[in-house]
Image 1 (tube, rainbow, N blue to C red):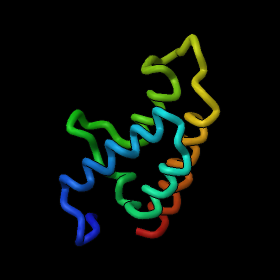
Image 2: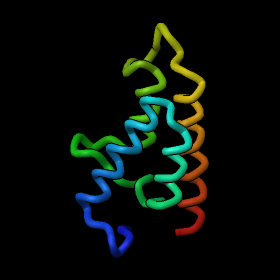
Image 3: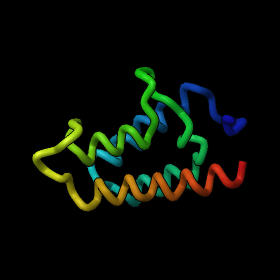
Image 4: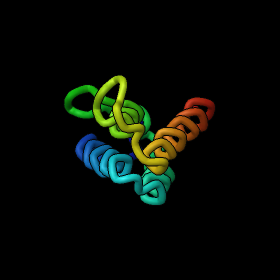
Length: 92
């Protein structure tokens, strides 16, 4: 469900910005995006990825068993998305 003032293009742009916040570990920015656009949790990228998938890949260096664990901020970004997803799902 899109927020009436947002188009699909806006949601994709927001997804890209949120994904970059996850990659860079900018959890404050991620929380602001999720507060403003909670529907981003269910938005998919042009390649079919969700924000959670993108955040998990960022935290694991884009591989299944990472040689480096990622930063605490990247893992916190995954936790934030999981919490937001729970709030979004229960309110639908």
